[in-house]
Length: 292
Image 1 (tube, rainbow, N blue to C red):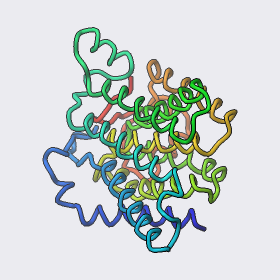
Image 2 (cartoon, rainbow, N blue to C red):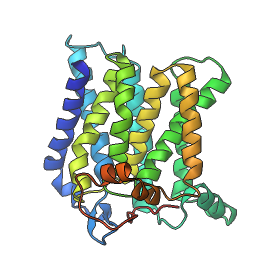
Image 3 (cartoon, helix red, strand yellow):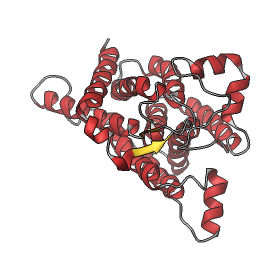
Image 4 (cartoon, helix red, strand yellow):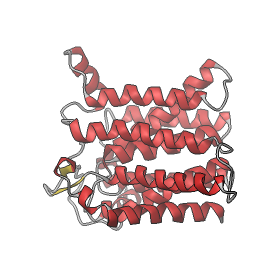
């Protein structure tokens, strides 16, 4: 029940922001064209990060006056807040300044060989740095383990970004992946820390599906990274190793295979992908990113 309440609080925080921050949503700097050519705000991820901050500030305040956990007792909460702001900042930079000309690992490396540093490359390098800091914080075991856990977080964030090629796709994938993770985490410290982020994602989903806003790299990176941190902090080493292998395979596959085309060819995936959204052409890609 505690986890459910945390999910609901995250959901309500985002819904409040959607109503209260309408002037921010209309800011010209945050407008982008989607795959239909319609201009909409790329602020879904910003709302998620802001909602998580509101929830965590409320938790800390209540804890300080004796209601709930005392501040500092749950290490997962500040770590997840760091992840939200760190990956969110990097994603927002890519949303606002990125040109979309160089996509994928190959594209960023090609640009670097030409003497250009893309916002995507800065996002990858910065994300790797944040992942290392977070992976090392709970307590040093071995250097290999820290690198492996950091790789898991960074690849999870990147996969979230790779999936963000159609309205609601990343959020749906994250929520589906969250269900077994939530079962494993239960009502422990990590489970309670992650829940408001998932609630916030759920609160952004209707706007993303109806194409009133985009999740953007900001949100896609944050949601992927948060699930990665949940796995690192809340599961066994064997589980983490299995997840790393899966993430490596999926990230490498994205360099050669269009996820949109694969989804369109598999009926259950196509049904889930289009559930709740507007009709769109097969394998349509968002203008805030195209499949490799």
